[in-house]
Image 1: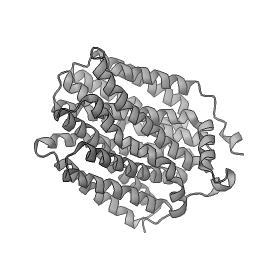
Image 2: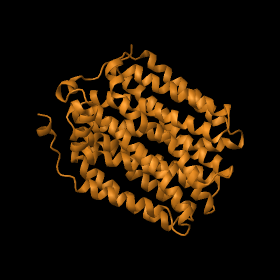
Image 3: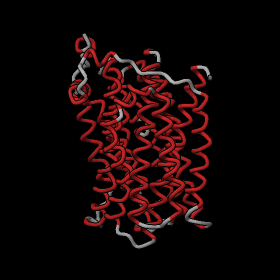
Amino acid sequence: MVSNRTRFWILIGLVTISGFSQGMLLPLLAVILEQNGVSSSVNGLHAAALYIGILISSPFMEKPLQKFGYKPVIMFGGILVIVSLALFPVWQSLWFWFILRMTIGIGDQILHFGTQTWITATAHEKSRGKSIAYYGLFFSVGFTLGPLMTNLLSISIYLPFIISAVISLAVWMTMWFVRNQMPPQEHQTAYGTSSIKRFGLAIKLGWAAFLPPLTYGFLEATLHATFPIYGLRIGHDVNTLSLIIPSFAAASLLSQIPLGSLSDRYGRKIVITTVIAGGIAAFTLAGIFESSTAGLFITFAIGGFFVGSLFSLGITYMTDLLPKELLPAGNILCGMSFSIGSIGGPSITGIFIDVFEGISFFYLIVVTLVIVFLGVALKPAPQKAASSA
């Protein structure tokens, strides 16, 4: 069996291919459905299927993890994703693809929950921010590369799905070399066996930490699922969009590790509010320069540099606010927050661009970021030490 360090990088590899498949699916299916004449509102609701899967599966994962351990849970989630990707070429149907998207969401959430909890439970406290930053960094690597698969549509609409399934299978097989571990059991004695009770306490103590994942989900899904539709309507072509979209995730590659390290040194709250402020400025400029390819590329990159780390920063902030025995519940709630934002993003912005044709949808993003900024900024200092006693 592999060492703990090698295990860490295998887990990171799984996160990378998960980001790759998600980054590919959102713009790829958005473009296919738009070219097939599907309305932007229906397109946005269809994109929400991935996150509906994440949301409905989230409350049911803690007990299987406690019963079977990390490895079986992660491998089950991974195989769901692989099989679903391989089935896309079987039948081109709106509802069949909706079910496959939802199944991928379930598999991705199971995989992410297992890897997040394993990493957060075993990372050293002094370097936890940096460890989770690697998690976010390599998810972003996958997410950056995923939209490039849209260029393969000129060859075959099925080729991106086949390639993604093969790559995912290759990485998934490395988990066979990892020794299984069981998660900490302390929460069962500290807070009883009721998941609802643990979730309620986790929300009470750490609600502010769930806002960044929610915001990142909103941004990720909106920029990858709705922006391709919006971009086509304001005059940009598919090849241009396939380069603009990845610039958001690509820029986050530069900032994930530095921001994680800065949050270890100066605190999560100050770093999170600073990056949200940067995102507000970036997307305000995106609304102004949306007709310019160069302008969008630059503003997407600036936005990604700042808010592209919100998910990993939110997870680390959650570990500051919650006692260790509530980390499994906290990781589930981070995933649920991400999925709620991701469901709301394409749905709300899809309706928005249909109804308010003269207003840039980037301004809706700005309003969202302002609300989240205020929520995090107004959160009192963490009471973790007192609450865990």
